Length: 118
Ligand SMILES: [Zn+2]
Image (cartoon, rainbow, N blue to C red; front, side, top):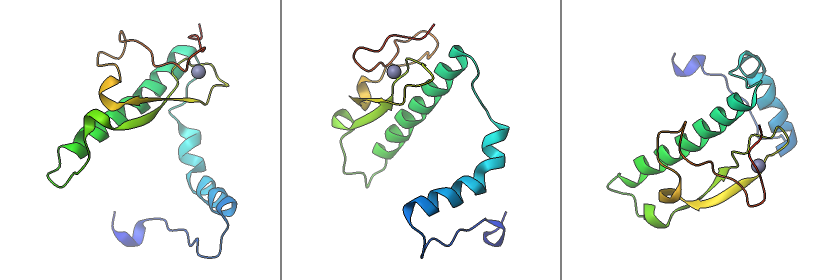
């Protein structure tokens, strides 16, 4: 794929809402194709995959020689892993406090008061 093949959206005259609408249109087919989660286990696995990707991204960032940040004190908002379909909240943790792998058996990251969906 070269630069000419990359879809582009001109957002110069669009509001934030209009920009969101255009981005949603652009990715509608891809989002509809999935992956999607239809069970609690699948939702939880996708949430963990998202959170783990953030952890890995921050580890990679802080190994760069030009990185001025300190991984030990970097706080990130991680998605609550209760896996209730209506939960869209997050938990702030330092990156090193995120549970280590294996993801299938390590503790869930939960907003206080949230209980894991069954
Ligand atoms: Zn939750």
